[in-house]
Image (cartoon, rainbow, N blue to C red; front, top):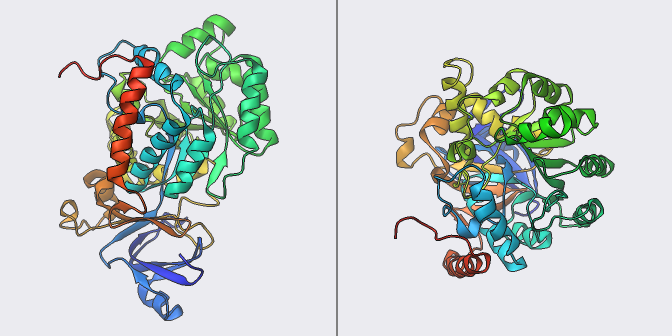
Length: 454
């Protein structure tokens, strides 16, 4: 998009501080930024030469935010890991061996496919989960499709495994990522695998490194009860209590999962303003017990920082933010048996502005306001699932739709999805490459057959 103004029209769900929805509205975009949000009539008067894109029936929202997504590993064997395995077996029999065999071309192809699907479903900001072997390859994929991403790399120093190493070796890898320059849409983060696979020395130094570089650190913790058991045995304290005692927690920390936490851990998350990313489809897919202990709702009620994530293509599988938001809203109603406390509008906030606030990017994205980046998602409400249109468009978006109705997507003012297709990608070519890469990856890693049926 050139520096001249372009107007994207429709019903504008701003998710701004006043939560305005502007019917027969528009978003004026210049270069990478939003310059005005108003009625279409007012905008066309202010910018008479600006081209107008879209249809008056469209629903226009801020780009969706995926706070935890594995961009490599699972994609090339997506939906292949059986869903009836014993706890932990999927990780050590499938995921770790596959990651160990990922080559630079695999990382780039995998990330290209995942980010393309993300954009196609309206996710404009993806926060990588920290298991990338070849960060420059993933950055190349992000640049190719035009996605806004963070990138981290493997970090663990306990037990043997791919990319495990000493504290110094792991930190050297983090330094390499932090010292890379990949353009304005790709941001380096510090990342550790987490769980009980990081020494106190490593997590302390890694947290300090993130603070020093004014960036974030992310790691996995407590999706199941295993981490609590391991920390209690090693330290006598619950995981997040122990990390708080080490001085690790803070606004610069993003914890993936934190499903099985106690009251003290939840209190510490709120006090230290440490963010949590909830990936509800993964917990259901893996049977990790979120429906028995939905502490993410408690965190939200306590004013904690919370975002949503899609996780991996063998743990949640489909990369669709709307689908994830709807599941979270359903759990928030059903677990406490309270249909009034949380609904579609709150779920959309987690997917947009509240997620952006949790992840520290609300100054850039998460709402449609002048001065913010022009990350926009356009849903085509002429499609069948939108007919007839509800008077509450957010209610219909979360409960009655998903990523299928996304027609156009913009990231920093650039149109990256047009008429339902990712701009510049040859899907036929990608499909052929992915099929071959998947076969080779299975052979190199020695993972079991893909299915019980065949």
